[in-house]
Amino acid sequence: MHNIGDLRAAVIARRTELGMTATDLQRASGLSARTIREVESGDTHRRFGSTTLARLDVALGWPTGTAYARWTGDTADDMSSTVAEQLIALTERIRRMEDEPPWQRDWLSLGGQLTPDQRALLQALGTQLVASRDGHGR
Image (cartoon, rainbow, N blue to C red):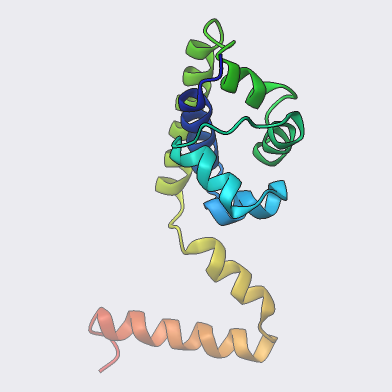
């Protein structure tokens, strides 16, 4: 018996954990937007082939056979450990977000694209902004 609900929940949880959009999953898996929509909506009577399920495994970084096991409901024994793993991963992701602002990576990446003169100008601007905010720049 196939249980699209188990597959649906697992795919959405893993995709979210990885910070992927449905479009990202579509690109990573090579599956059609329709297939991703059907998996994630759970509103289908479609039978998914082994290739489709294997592509989900690869795109989501799952061990081979995970999507199939979710779809067939053969994961009752593994469910609690999977939930615990997802909770640990989510907790770690939240901790990283608290430790560094979400814009920090973008900012650092941008800094690497600037010339030394542009970086110096940006640093001077930042110093002026901080000084004016603290009342020292008047």
